[in-house]
Image (tube, rainbow, N blue to C red; front, side):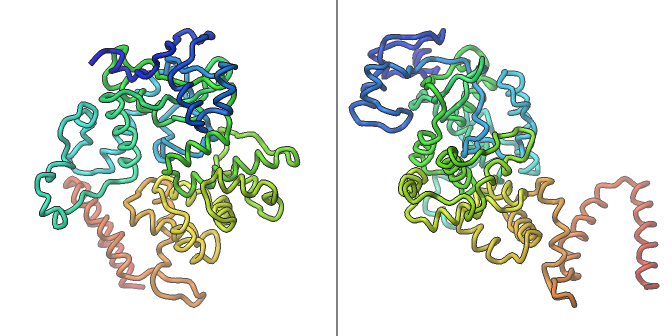
Length: 420
C-alpha cells in the first residue's frame, strides 16, 4: 500500500491536488464535481455555483492546527473523560488525553484484562471475536458487557482502524478561527487521526484531508449529523437549540458559548417554549434539519434542555433515547431531585460509576418502602446489597493492623446499636 493511501488521502482527487500551505489552489477536486453532479448538500451551500467561485478546497491540514467546535451537538469525547484534555490540539496534550482515557477504560473493565488497543488498530484478533467460529452457539454464549467509557472509545478506535486500513473516505470540514482551524464536521475523524498519530508516531497521521469552508454553518452541520443518523437524545437537543437560536437571532440576543460555564446553560437559553416559540414559517425547515416528523418531537427535545445538569451528562454519555428519558425519568419524577434520583438508578444499572453519579447515591436510600412524609425509606435489603457488600470487599484488602482497628470500631458500633 502506498504511503499516500496509508495516510488516508483522497485517492479520488484526479482533477486537483492537495495543498499543504493553505493558500489558494485553482484546481477542482473530484469531490467538487461529484457534489455538483449529485447536488450534494453535505458541506456545500451551492455546489454548481462552487464550480465557478471555487470557494472550498480539500487540503491536507495539520491535525495540531485544528480544534473542535465547542457547540457541536455531537460529542465524540464523553463528559466523564473530558476533564483530562487541556483543550489544546498539540500532540503531547492529545497523547496525555488518550492515555488517561485508556486508563479509565481499564479501570471500568476491572480485573486484569486490558483494552487491546494495539490489536484493534493493527487489525489483529481481539477477545470479542474469540467465539466467532461458534455460530450455532452464539445465542447461548454470554455477551461481554461493555462500559460507557469503553463504548465511546471504541467508536474512535474502530474508525481509526478503518482509516488505517482503507484511508479517510470522507474529509472533515473546517473553518478558519484566528490562527487555527475549527471543525464544522468530523470531530471523531479528527480524533481518530490523533489516536493513530499518538499510537504509531511517524509522519503518516500528522495531516488530515479537510474541506476548508468560509464559516461554520450550523444548518450544514445538522444535515451531516442527520445523514449519519447516530445522534443521541441530548445531541439532538443541542442541535434543536442551535438551530432555533439561529432562527431567532434577529429578535433575541443570546449569550455566546462560555467554556468556563456548564455547556447545558448555553443551549438552555431557548428552553422556555412560551418565550422562544418556533416561527410557523420556519417550522418545516426546522423539522427537516432535525430529521423529525412532527412538532411534538420538537417539544419533546426542548424539554431535555430543562433536565438537571447531572442527568443531562449521564444521558449523553450513556446514549439514552429521548423516549427513555421522557418515560423513565421526566414522567416518573415529582421534582428535579427526583429526576436526579431516577437518573442515578438507571446510570448505575448501566454500569456507570463515575463520581458525578456516586455523589448522588444517597438519593437511592428512598427507593423502597414509604415513610410518614410519603417518601420512600431505606431498608435492610438496601444496606445489605450496597454498604455491607462494599464494606466486605474493603475489609478484605486491609492489613492485619488496620483489620484490628476496623474490628474494634465495628464492635463499638454494634454496642451502640444494641443500646439504642
